[in-house]
Image (tube, rainbow, N blue to C red; front, side, top):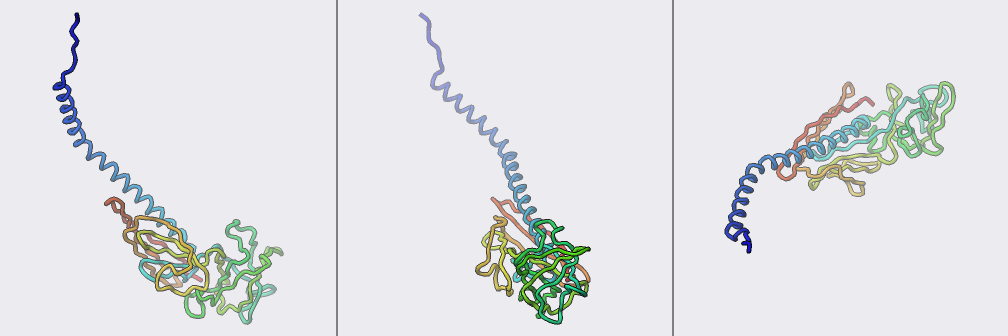
Length: 270
């Protein structure tokens, strides 16, 4: 008769203890690299979000109407965006009359030759010579007019575009016969840091400078989360050179913090 052999309970307990000790020693050596990997991944994620955020803001701000950028607080920046611009006829048939109220004028060029998202359309807002001061302030609609029906039409050789607007007497002529066009859907755009989030908001004209951002009724969307600090500043307005927007953004997650500084030059020439 053969004898059956196996592990005793003492041997099994000893194996478990030895494996536990070895596992603990391995964990001690592995913990540092693993923690470093996850910390690096968090920093990379925060950096990516912060970089994408400031680039998105910079892209929007570069399209700002001259002399429309403002900072109601250092946590908030606002501006009037533009979709396109052009030159108006200053003399002859279809000229833009600054001596009296007018309902149409000709643009030098073909509106339909623009990309579809830049073509002037009904309900867009035409702005002429915005200085950002009383009497020539697009926020107060001093120098703006809404594109009326019918939609702009193109005719002649070389091509000119007839733009029909709600009756308006523009206060000041542009020295270079320029005008800008504000999209109907986003007449004012702003960014504000609040409650650990960076919000992008849009609203319509007229729009007086608010005491806090955004004002009631604005449409908001979340641009970034985990915002621990931010600061916006604007060095304007100089008609001879670009103004400068400075943005400082800080994101924090699980003890990891990333800080970014970004500057955007804004064309001030109206």
